[in-house]
Image 1 (cartoon, each protein chain N blue to C red):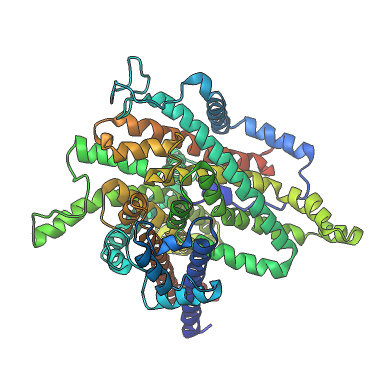
Image 2: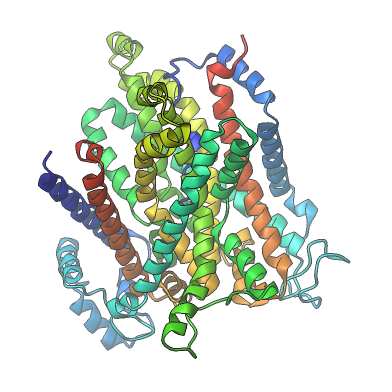
Length: 320
Length: 299
């Protein structure tokens, strides 16, 4: 398959996935018990404001027409108005999005940086004590509840040792280079919590695929050719084993975003997740709806980009 | 929240096992008995289920406010008290009941629906194409924010949480069961069954479902533990049933009242409870998978 066709197909699938997310949201809002008008109009509004909003969003129209009005509004980036802040939901969320992106991206980088060496360590000492240890860590890591990890780190490093700040994303009182330093300081604990819950399954996957790769014929050939075990492990087997591990990261992006929502809540980190928490307490439905759609689009775009980049790096992806 | 399916639960089964049979299950049980971690997890799960059944005998329901606010563990309170002076031990005990209930109910619904969809899809290829796409798309979306939206709209209650968690857990079940079912329906004995009867439901019920049963057992355990995490996640965001105690609600109240920073017991014990339940369920599924592998049976 040519690379252009491959990229086009991935783009098409991304658009299709986003359409699916939007349609599911629309159907959930309209068909669930509960007042669909809640998604745009607060019960606290006056009767006239409420009626005007309902007409504006076409909620007095038949379902199918409502659907197209809904699609049309989303395409133009209209996610409604926040009940509590009386500004467009898009503005509320877009100013929060960068923090969520920074948090999840650094958690991903940390996961890969820690996960690959741990996976290699376990696979190259298969059946030994180190392998058992890494496996136990991996399984335990998968069973952790995100807020529990966050709270534990917060109590330990934030309150008892006082090494790191316990909440927020930056220090108001500093400027320039020091500001970036404070951003890093505030980022460390949330990113670490998110990494810890993600790391287990990543390490176990790297380990399993690497063990598979080490049993392949080309590894035997490389051994017969007298290549050093180190070189075979890192240069040959690992490169082939990384494809499934990368695919796993893509599959888990949705899960990672869920983890980010909980982590941001623990650390009062001003991303979309903390926004969701605040919107829940205030029953701000337009924000909740917009947050899901924006996060869905983010996940889809991130997945698409990884796939395309990986398609250039690894020819197997294009044919798969 | 959708935790990733443990890698061990996804390890390919050596070959589609056509008939379970009582001899095979006895061999599985013999192999399982030799795994200390598997037995330990089974024991922990058993204890948690006992606690949830015996909750009224173990502690009075912590409803009223007490005067002993934020007492550390010890004295009259084995696990301490919360910001409103309620006994944490009672909250944990009653929270166990809620967590076990949500896990059992949500995973039962998700398993029943997910298996049905998977098996029907495997049996009817045209349907399978659609199911495959829907499952892939759902799994690629951030499910927790969607659960939050739905739970907030419908209003928090135990039945809402069960239904919401089940509604977004079945695709994972379908994905696991489907890959096995697709292999099973291609086997000769299914063709033979088709020659014997035109009753497709009978073939599905008598031959396809039993053949995928081991995968279903694994996904029951995995889905249930994920349901606990999802329900706790929703409760931690304030979407738990406000009239019932749950582990997530204890954490939510500790965070919301600000007691979290001074009273370590308020976050440690519910966290340990969640970890005990989820970890033992995960270990149990791994041990069961190992025991089911005929290579680990002694002849």
